[in-house]
Length: 168
Length: 273
Image (cartoon, rainbow over all chains, first blue to last red):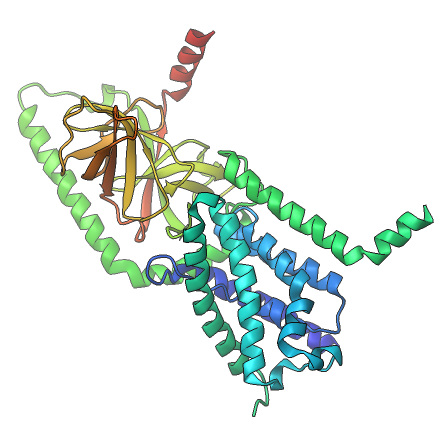
């Protein structure tokens, strides 16, 4: 158990640093950045209580906000993602989730991509809606959501595949 | 009472979600509405320390560019010195008797963003270097922004690429004033609004600071006129200004403190009363 906790703490710190030091400065085509720190929320153990997940997601989002001077937008999006994670898990993994037997390290790649995509769209839409905070620029919100989602999904799936042990 | 406890225990996940989401929303709304006094900002020991460590590695990759910027600035300053000497050759002025109006501090940029809709910079000077809110920040090419939050050894700068930024500016040629804003679209352009349409604007004209506020001295460069059109009502111009500064590549900045600021503000307040 201690070993698992240590893994998650290290993952938390590493993803936070990668996000604020590298991913926030990519600015592909001027404004497209991947937000890979949500990998932490996606890979949080399923059997653990949801309260812990909510609190840890809030802390992670708040730290990203602190580093990027963005008020509370990352915290809000992360908390929303953490709260709705069971629904997304159920819709992308179906039976596996109901039997509580998902192992992210050896799931079907199609299911994994569905899961990451759904979660990323939700997270990014809330993030950009709150960041721009103006209904009249809804096109800009959707545009940023679309492009950043593509970028984030590619990078996140690669991270999950590369760093998962014994994938066939 | 029992039922209330039962309700709380049954819905604890949802209630915790509401609480945390509410806190983040409140922080978001606060950061959109108030000019200052933000609760969560990157002017603190943790973020400053992390950015500082990374910056000390990162700045080696940027040395060539920064050297070129310094050479450019030296060239410009030398030109001023040589011209100054020939101009005032006959009537020598002892500079020790001229009281200086602005105190200049040099700072390194630890974090810079330009792709969000509200951008901030983090710099490595703070209260212990007597940096306070509302000091102006410039580079050798033009203005960057205004100091927003300070901590002991770091400060955040409200960039001109921020929807909350309002800076007094004027046309260099005719001294018609306007207010400098950003519409959030491109980091290369800012907008000068509320310019009277008596002003003879030409594409390529220089825009500089107006000197009406106590933050920036008069005549610091901002950019050149790229295009302009009249307002919907038709009595003011909105001018697209192409910035002199490349906002995506800023290494060293100068912080300006107006030493007469208190005096000016007391005078203006006494007039208002």
